[in-house]
Length: 358
Ligand code: DOR
Ligand code: ZN
Image (tube, rainbow, N blue to C red; front, side, top):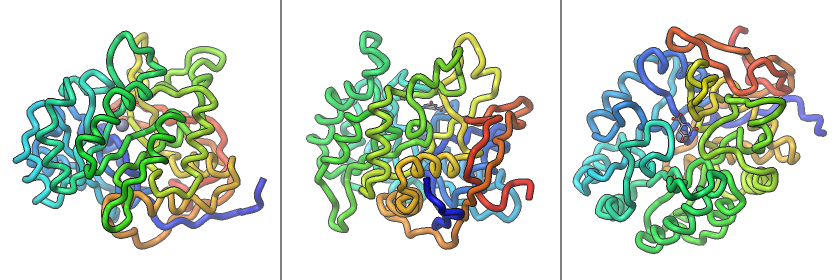
């Protein structure tokens, strides 16, 4: 237990975020804009954001949906498909508006059916990305039905990531939302850095994977709001992720993977994957870092390492959290329906200041 009462961070960046579109965007975005200065915005809309102009249009819709006075900056990404050409990569790089391409193995998760069917097909695009210094963000799970869902990340690393890094040793890669000791170790032991000393392989870690193991999915009954992909793993993996996040290693940085779905899409016979953490993201990361007595490491994890990886300057300004218990709203309005934030209805012991209704 520590007696720290307030924690002031450089305004942080969420380096992995789902914002959706239309009314859902309108209702999800303000929560992130309250806590974060910038976010890497995922392109898995329907249809996916595959062309530069689609990303520029989506960016405008995000800016229009911001609350008055917000200076939040969306950092756009494009969705890598079998049809992504080296020219599309070069055009995206020239625009300065596209910060990465996202690789979803086809069928891996929400709206991933346009994803890459076989990694080799993407090799010309990956070669162009390596040349342009354009990062590749990877949803690192195999989709083969014969691979156990709890093994899909580790198998992806062994079957695909090792070969991919050999083929493109200078490609900038983020292994997104890592969930296993295997992934943390793979990233931690990747020695490659660029001329500025920035790691070429990094990983984002979500708050929910730092705080929960797979028991959370079945605590007293089935708990759909804890269901995300990659799925929560056993406790030893959670502990390895906590080690990585709190180690001060610049290869690991914050990405919430906050992924809003309406309540009825989660609480269903076949519920959607995704934890909505935009409402209480920093508070959840605080709880995780405090578990390790590592609150002093949160600033670099949340506000520095990600910016350095993407070649961005650090944000001006700060955000302050106070040790104050508060109850996370049980549900919130979401696209003419409602949404349940992760930990909705529960007490948390840190709170971003000022509180939203202050
Ligand atoms: O849980 C998840 N939800 N994992 C993903 O990879 C996608 C996301 C979503 O878009 O809902
Ligand atoms: Zn995601």
